[in-house]
Length: 304
Image 1 (cartoon, rainbow, N blue to C red):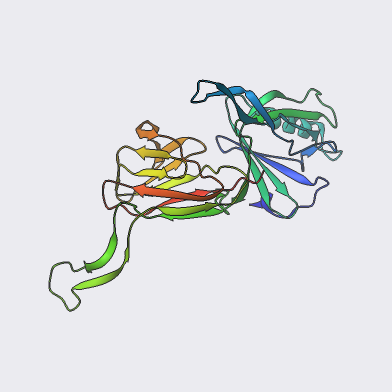
Image 2 (tube, rainbow, N blue to C red):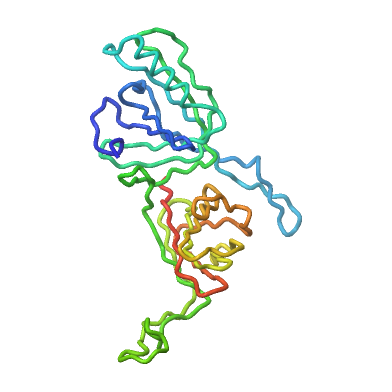
């Protein structure tokens, strides 16, 4: 898309804000320039006042968590070429975009077209454009993030997020291949049975490069009965209790904690733990109660 192409602007970086209903607003260029003092990539903070862990001997141990710091976005609407009605139009656009009860994804775009993202932002300072009918009114909004990590980011031409890494998970509990019938089946023909390359089953090694856990998207093609994924390395197991019909696709997003079947919400059939992938090698097993097609894991690595 255009926002991810190389750009010329007085700002080193742009911020493409994507609301949870897929509405978008580009900050840092055009109508919404950043102030020169704009700062990005504030360091996260470590806190140990939220989580408490009890050891085997009954002693309470402090558990550290990572919190994101507030990210302020500040700038000016337009320049001297805009009329007052145009300035007012952009002011209203800004105020209408940043609304309560939405999550916001922020994609930071660099001058070479590469980008990184932060997820699950929420408003902590209400959007404000206090001056009315001014030539250079200032705008301000601030977000915090449930997820403190920065992730890789890329888009397709249609504006849909693409993933930098994908792993194919063959069934771990079923062997495949060997002497099998061709499409004619048991009817006599000149080919009869054919030999297919075999797979011995077993888990898949999934390698993650990054500085923190990745939270993948799991895609299951039907027909799959009670598909289950287990990260043997972490001990996490997640099951979707039901049947994914042939020709349909189940998508489980471990970061957003959602499950959809052909776009319909099927979260209620999820049981177990959300799967994370640790940096390094992960042993991942995929099982089902039938001879299901392979499933896939896709993710963007944590870069900071």
